Amino acid sequence: MFKKLLASIGVGGAKVDTQLDNPRLYPGDVLRGKVVVQGGKAAQDIEKIELVLMIEAEDDSNDDTRVNLPLGSLRVSQAFTIRAEERREFPFEIQLPADLPINGLPYHGQPLPIWIHTDLAIDAAIDTNDRDFLEILPPAPVSTLLQAFDQLGWGISSTDVELGTARVGHVSSTLGCYQEIELRPRGGSFRIQEIELTFLPYGNETHVLIEVDSRFGSDFYASLVMGPDFAHRDWVNELRAQLPL
Image 1 (cartoon, helix red, strand yellow):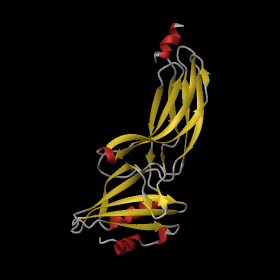
Image 2 (spheres, rainbow, N blue to C red; image 1 turned 60 degrees about the vertical axis):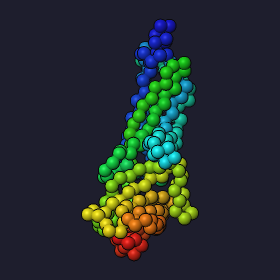
Image 3 (cartoon, rainbow, N blue to C red; image 1 turned 135 degrees about the vertical axis):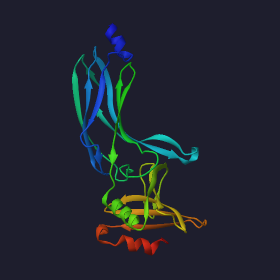
Image 4 (cartoon, rainbow, N blue to C red; image 1 turned 90 degrees about the horizontal axis):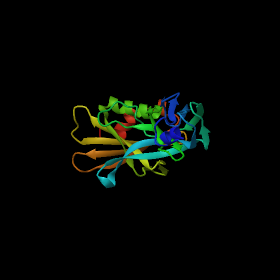
């Protein structure tokens, strides 16, 4: 009885460990792994195991305060009892959103955490949780356009995720947040101070919103569509034709 009491307040209770098979992956990929639950000194009733995909996003309405935003969840198990010293494993697969922001980019500024939060809900006890970080790599269209900007003398200065919805024509972000990748010219630019890019996948296309911040106050937006043939197009010349670079 005393062991059960201690377990209920987190002493000698069950432990959870989420093990990811592929923590480096692309938006839209399937994340695979398993949740390992190790029983403690006494049997405990587990109400659920739930995995939550999380990200830090900025709230413009509250002085750019960074908040933890859930993007989706997966119930790994229903209620069960873990016996003392018992080990249980629960394999899982999670389909990542196609418009999940990217943090596997070289840039200066605050890191962009994206992680899996593991919630082990224990009956009449303190819930325990586990946090496992992901590295989300840029898909080929994103890398291609960033390389074109780089050839034109524009490099990534920072990237952030903002609460809200981004739209390019009829295409909208779906997660309650969107990413802006900020570019600055190496060596400076007489006309443009900064360019911000938002990538929105849609089927086999990637729609790109381009916000141009001018030094003289005449900011403007442009957009482009990268279709299945994106790898065979001359993006350096297309960007020159659309933007005053």
